[in-house]
Image 1 (cartoon, protein in one colour):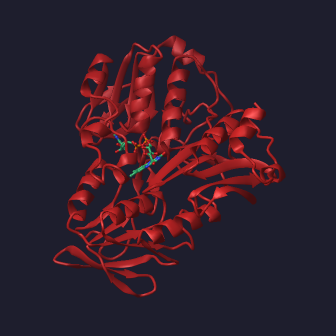
Image 2: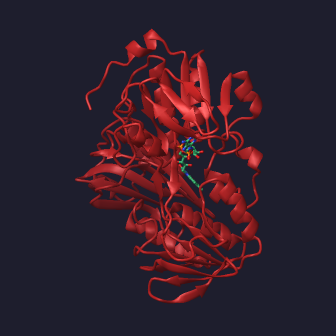
Amino acid sequence: MPRRDHTQPRLMSLHSVVIAGAGQAGFQTAASLRQDGYDGRITLVGDEPGLPYQRPPLSKAYLMGKTSAEALCFRPEKFFADNKIEVVAPTRVTAIDRTNRRVALASGGALEYDHLVLALGAHNRTLPIPGADFEGVFGLRTLADADAIGAMLADAQEVVVAGAGFIGLEFAAVASVLGKSVHVLELADRPMARAVSPAMSDLFADAHSSWGVKIDFGQGLAGILGEAGRVASVETTDGRKRPADIVVFGIGVLPNVAIAAEAGLDIDNGIKVDADLLTSDPAISAIGDCASFPSPHAASHIRLESVQNAADQSRAVAARLMGKVAPYAAVPWFWSDQRDLKLQIAGLSSGCDHTVIIGNADERRMSVLCFRRDKLIAVESVNRGSDHVAARKIFGRGMPALAAAEASKPGFDLKAWEAATR
Ligand SMILES: Cc1cc2nc3c(=O)[nH]c(=O)nc-3n(C[C@H](O)[C@H](O)[C@H](O)COP(=O)(O)OP(=O)(O)OC[C@H]3O[C@@H](n4cnc5c(N)ncnc54)[C@H](O)[C@@H]3O)c2cc1C
């Protein structure tokens, strides 16, 4: 999509910004608009009850009982009142009337906008297998999900997790700390296969094994068997049965695109936006988990599911609406906490054809430097925060001139290399 001139609409009039979706990206857009000096009307429409909250602790500290629901909220009620951010919740945006620049609400009525920001997030994928609707079968996306899981987990002993991705493994790690018998079923031959290198997968597979978490690779969930409407056991794709008091799905998410598609916006693995995060309608932006965007760090449009992406895109949209136009180019980064392992990833590793490992897997302090055609494209670190920080600085500067041969030299130090080449 060619870039458009965005200064004109702002100069004309921007009296009302409506944000559909009150999660990470929706909240941050509202907060950044105020921070950047926008003094028009901001309406944040969310379909979950309560104030906007952060999701990462749901599969970590919150499930462990180490933090409260209140502490998950980005800001207390006073912040929204003080900043004149109208939170309309819980209700859904059901339709977008692009001609009249109006959104319809499930609760009735409509909101007019000069600019609409779609921050709709994503929903859990489920499996169309028998028993998926039994009591005790969960996805983990919302505070309500985490509360329901927490309530049942207390008395559960046999825990089955479908999918060894980030959410599945974070949940498995928590359940293992709580003393449960944990079985993870994963169709691939290694954990987090879509996101990390084989060396990093191996480290996490070993760690989970040492915590007593059993991961069955090459195995999926074929069916869920129940008694009196409640899960009792599962059947795996190789025909085996195992007991289950609770089953948690962690098999990925799908972007929430329905209202955008119905309104005729371009969709391509998410709501398609240009480098300025504008949809095919220049009065509508899309950001966060629901948006597919062009990135200088990737060959084609990508969709990322991370706090960094949601927050940075929100700031970029707020800045653009206030006249500071710049193509979105933030360095992607991500983290996952699993017991004493802090995984941090900077950059995007797709297309990686060579890796260099620094640190020590046995000590669980390791970084994997991912190269494509001898160009550094991503750094995966576990318990090596300084490598992660250095990597973000390196990618933030543009094309890293670090060759694999140099990184392979004994004693190579990424932080020192970053400082020396600054
Ligand atoms: C359990 C869990 C753990 C995670 N851990 C990490 C982590 O460790 N690190 C990391 O970087 N990322 C993590 N993430 C991902 C991160 O939380 C998401 O990438 C981020 O929340 C995306 O923000 P968002 O605003 O795009 O979507 P969301 O935060 O999902 O917000 C979208 C909101 O819009 C609402 N909505 C949808 N449709 C409508 C509608 N029509 N009308 C009104 N409202 C609507 C949704 O219900 C939701 O409340 C985790 C996610 C989960 C679920």
